[in-house]
Image (spheres, rainbow, N blue to C red):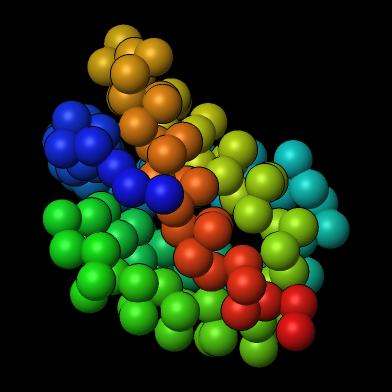
Amino acid sequence: MSLTSTQIDLVQTSFKQVEPISEQAAAVFYDALFQIDPNLRPLFKQDIRSQGRKLMAMLKAAVEGLTDLDALVPQLHELARRHQAYGVRQSHFTPVGNALLYTLKTGLGEAYTREVREAWVAVIHLVADTMKPLLDR
């Protein structure tokens, strides 16, 4: 799956709007994730604030890497290998994606347009399609 330059721009621009409130966004994300699927809570053994900082750093790297997928894909493969060791399964991508979309909707407010949502959905699918084959092995 490839992304259009418009989708990349929408994702990068919207992420820059969320980045200043990254700590709050991470809290919204994990609250939403554990409401969507409470069974995921035991996978997070670290302090959730620390985990939130890692989440936002990973999102930033992925968002910035969208303009160079050849460099991003190996990073996503490594991320998948690490997450497999933590117990992450392919089935976890749907609740994570839904929690991320909810977080973006909450953080962006009126700037969360249909086009922005569709661009993020495309990115979520790209990331999931890249990482899933390395999980559940």
